Image (cartoon, rainbow, N blue to C red; front, side):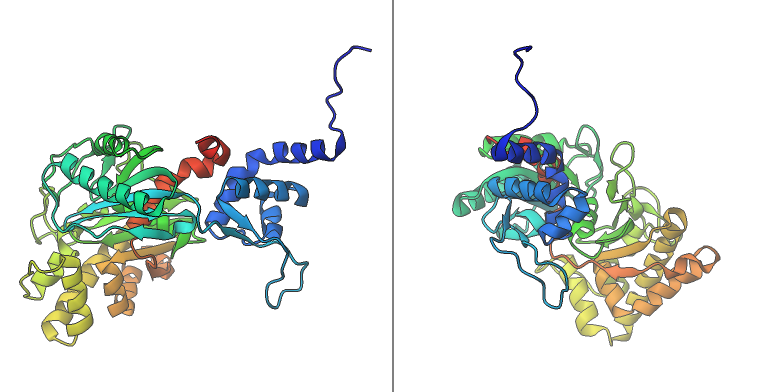
Length: 414
């Protein structure tokens, strides 16, 4: 006899612990499946993870103990299903949240976002943006901190969406062209300092707003199920783009990929902030629509709302229709070039571009098809984004990612 304890499990309690130990590596993948709506039941979770029912049960129980999901006590069958009833899985209504913040040319907003991309609470948006990024980010973080105090929710971290390319690894806003911020402002560092000063726990992140919109739409909206997703959007000013490749956001070697706003679509067009002329950024955004239609933008509401209202309420006006067609043609030209280079399996459009698609979908698709390689790329689906506040939801996804990667490590004992 060596005197060493037998390492083999004995007894029901030990067997249960062994199953959980075996499944700990599956906690993150399991949570992501529930988070994105791909595992509504324990049976689906078992199949997707490729584990035994007992291991899947242990994994689900651990996620429930962390306050992230709820497992129905009794199995139930979906209406019309023929299979064996299974325990339903749902995200915890009272679970943790991430603080999401967004800054754009017409103001800023803070929100609390739970798993599943569900916005739990929002703070009223501010309509002015100071030239000092520290002042702006301090204000938006304080608005988020007040939401946390009001709701009493546990916070896993914070994410910020900004209308600028954000250089990695420093987190610098290289070109906040439509804000009065200095180029190269260290927005991630400033944001993290504001988060710490507000007493908010968890890591802080920052990224480009359209990148985050694409991430949110891929997980929870119009991009679900796409492998290679192209997102192009115009919000309050300018045009941005993003690409999700094989399920992951593609930001390039230093975070600067897909600056599509500076594709030239009208060589004799308007001067652009970048020094060129006729870029998408100035030829297919809300200000471009208003000026092309001969409408002077007013200060009472955002440019995006003015442009959307013009299309929805006055499209029968010949000047408005002509302006819309001009923007659609320019947008289509840019999309065709991107399709020829990137070969996505789906395109989603946000902001004013979503409204342009709704206004005349056949014209936009025809322009893309006419300019596509060998006519083969003209069949790529072009769809509207479906999430409200998708950049805010995407900012929250940044904060949720460490939890999705390692739920136990991120939450246990915090």
